[in-house]
Image 1: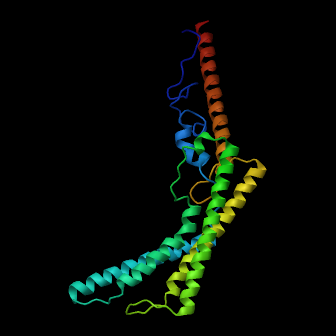
Image 2: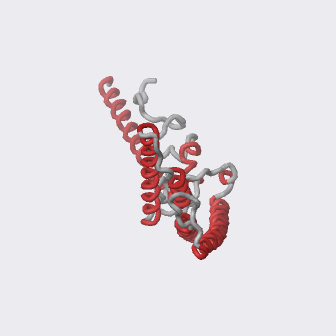
Image 3: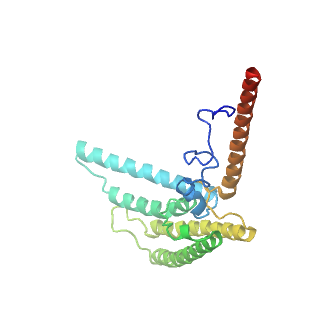
Length: 253
């Protein structure tokens, strides 16, 4: 129509659900699908030296186990001999990785999360549910520490050894199990403290990105900045269109 500027190609329009920007994530029709992990996920503490040490030990264990298996394959096929220790050492390493990786998986949110219940709860109720789950996990972890420590002490006091060529004292590989549970309990305590602080402060209860940094408040600030940027762009486009219409009218008159 005369006197009305045409919309600029590629410019975002009001009510366009295809616009995906900083404000669309968590705010538009595509928000729940893209931001569910940050808005609904369990809040986790950041990674510290404890989790980094456990992760490094797990990585070293994987490398050592791979080297032992490869060496066993080479010696059996080329020299028709075996060191007869690969199964024993491999079993000890698997047990160590299983328990030492517990705190690493907790801070990096590597465990499976079923969110169909939490997605239907309000922020405060969801926070309470996460806190209850963390407390139950801490209680279960305390029971494991108690029982595994008792088994390790019994093996140490009785002098039990493995019935193998190495005759490994059993308390050495068994001691890794309570140590891993203690590390997990420490991480859970930090997670519980974070949940309590967020509940008392009334901040969003969404979990942080991988690595543990809280992302709820940052996501809200990013959405507000995205809305402001889109509004400024639309205002600028409107001023350009008005100027063009004014120039056209001036030329016609």
